[in-house]
Length: 584
Image (cartoon, rainbow, N blue to C red; front, side):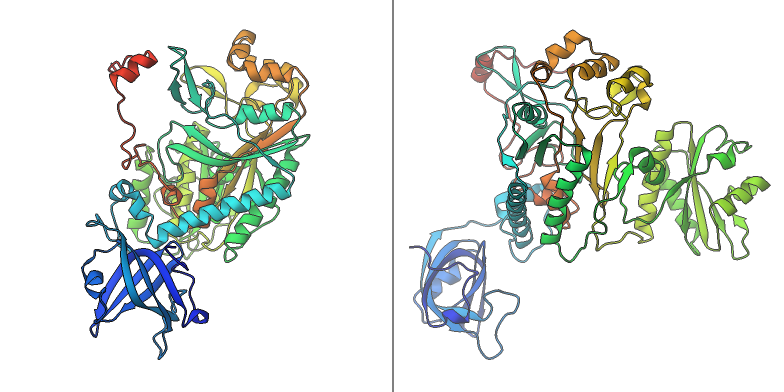
């Protein structure tokens, strides 16, 4: 036996017991001729004391930090005010009788303790060492507990857990696939699933009522703070005989339970989650992932400027953000101009309200009397207020710029609430969008969603006016999940894809499994897939998603520890029937 207890287990009830502990020599110090060793494992740290006349004193003094050792000794009380309240084992220590080296450690590339700042590239190269650090290990243990809680909650709601394939066919929609060459079928490829979308729908057609899976998904996408390149995990859910509200009820039950369980210190602001249409979200927040902790709102002031002589506003969509600024130096406004120009815009118009109620700023002097009264009354302007304007012919450009300005102002002015979770549903997404570069109508979200109004809507409405039963759940400005009520009728499927430029033959070739299955009796069904990584990221208060993933890729999608991706041998290429050609 290598241990009788863990390094986080012992307390005063064990005083006098003979014990054996094993772990890593985290720290070592001498005081008054006595050696104090901090022995660490996943469960905690126990202080071990070695007297100078002990035969293992010299061994303890010479071995390097992070060497794995086993000690035997007696538990004693740390009396006389020597208890360490920062440790779960801080009331006791071990009087060491013997010590054995189980695994020697060479010089470390960075210290495990104390917790110092280390370059991310170095941390990822030696991730197994980084995982020994307290803050990183806590995140991983939190992740494990969150996934266990998710499973318990899904089972309690009557869901069955199934595993879908991770070798499948490439999809022409969505992000880029990771493809896997087939040795047995030269020139053909599998794809790693971007999501189990079609398989979970097929499960509903097969007659299973409620499915879930902690599903690995693979997308060849660029990295960002809330998105890991390559691989991620989601709570994949699908339900039969449901409408949109049924899905909402299940997801709110699970998410509210999770966030309350693991962060009771940060309340959920509103239950049920508020529902915001896509159009309203883009108008009011400039984003379909609004952070509701930010009190600032965007308003449309186009009608105030419908007869304007201001070239910046003329014949454009004009929107504004009102904010109470008080007195700010000119540099505050100049910095915002730099921020907007870095986003690719020409600039940001603004006015301020003086103590006398007059309007000041670059735009104020060119406002007409009707424009001045329209802004003052319509926006209920008062002393210390400022209004920031942006205008463009393209509404999406206005949303992009003012959405970013809203977030920037909320951050700079410290307006964003910190100790609350604000969830919302974004609903009524457009089913189609127009691709200017390709000059064609395309699906805007999920092509397998049910259009609102069904076949009649597709047949009688302009494609860009058709809404879908699609929805996102957002928390504190982070999209946790997308979902939809699925299109379960082949006739509607054919028409929906026809509008997006697919012939009947193309649809049947590219989505044969799905379209054929729908012809054999498909129930109305819908689902969603909250991202496990993003859930844990929010619960851990981590701004970067890599901090809650065991072995993440770096920003370039590389595994620095395992040296992946890496070349394969000529013999492997021949076996797969592949030839590497330079890009050109």
